[in-house]
Length: 466
Ligand code: FRU
Image 1 (tube, rainbow, N blue to C red):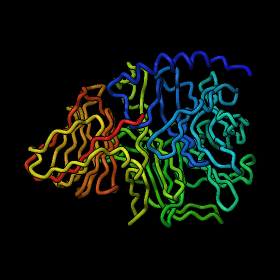
Image 2: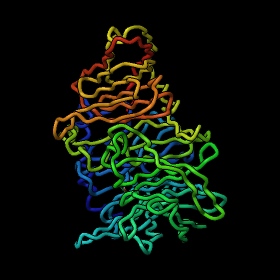
Image 3: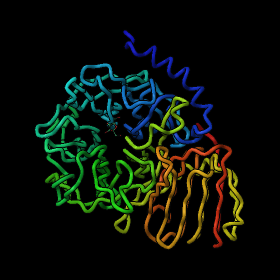
Image 4: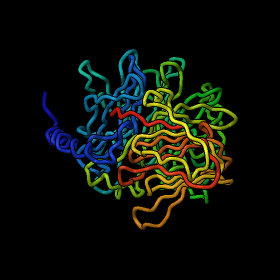
């Protein structure tokens, strides 16, 4: 067996980088994060042969968006993750500029990865191949090569295959940009994962009356949920609105009827999936018991990410916690996966005036808060305010120092907040909304409650498990 030429560099990066990353006070203690280098999208999320597998976009060599490999974790319970052998690295002509995002399927008992081989040319153009790789008995993956070239009418930005099976056929959605530089979601169909037929565009500019839909859609994921179908995707270039789509790129969802007969998706409006500062490229899978579970990248490309302080410790970004999805009353609900309750230590309770509530240790914390008016300060670097309008989340720009604000609008009755050293995930009204954000306080950091109103608190410190 010949070792690809970059193996020694990767091994050295991991050996040297790991101790540095783990010693960083911002390194997560219960969310998956890279041991070194830059991690972005979750990939290939699947329940397969008794374990969850979560792959991820990973540059192990440094904190830049290049040289994308697929890292690989697995877990029996969505809480404790173990490292698996590096799954894919960009060492073939057809994926030489990155093994880009994709999904995993169970093909007659063989764990099979569907990913994008990204190829850039000297003139600045690029192409993309949709490729397959299959698991070997030793846990490594053997590449089978490209199965789909760039379709006619699109630029080199066609990527992120999400593949699923229905009635014996395979289906694949792809994020795409057409030659007029408009964002689309494409659908393909195959009997064997190798020969694919186009079924056209199912979302994006000009589909179902959608206009101004941006210049590129990434990371689509289409699935059935509670009697409807949901398409999650990441449109780039949507106009900012006063209270939503405020990040460089948003993650969105739309729901509607998916008709396998005519391969058409009759969908409604776009909605923002998460209103926090950092959330992108989520992917879902089915749990063994049929729950639809989502994990997202708690990061956003091209934002202020390159100024995050963890970069000086040689690592960047983390995943969100796993979330259960439900569709009810025309809304998509997200709640932390019930397995996460295993992290809780003893429950504590407190009731009374917000300003008199105890400070909580922000390191690994979960709290539930019932209040209609309150402010919560997270270690002096992130601030949440609840009032009649909804929620304001404020943080200083890492670039300019000015206060940046994210909003969730609506009546707030209940918050459930999960903290892990440099992240918070705020679940509003039992899942009606979510705000996910990174923040970088000096540790030991405290969570403080402010205001004259009465609040009811339940809180737990969480166990470290990574
Ligand atoms: C989304 C994305 C994907 C691409 C991958 C490359 O964050 O841009 O579209 O496959 O990241 O790392």
